[in-house]
Image (cartoon, rainbow, N blue to C red):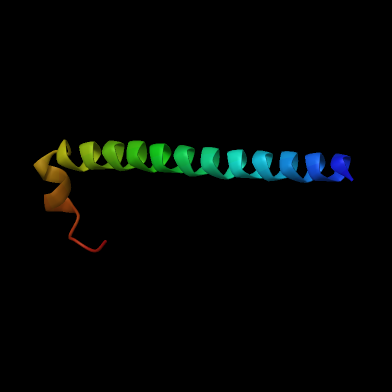
Length: 56
């Protein structure tokens, strides 16, 4: 019986670790992507906005 409890607890901790790791990587990657996109828009030349109407 103790083997089943150990396997269950091990599986629980591994699943929890996977979930927390995935969450942290998702937050970090979305923050990095947002920063890169924002920098690209802010540093775009004015001619880009003149040639491309909003919503296009």
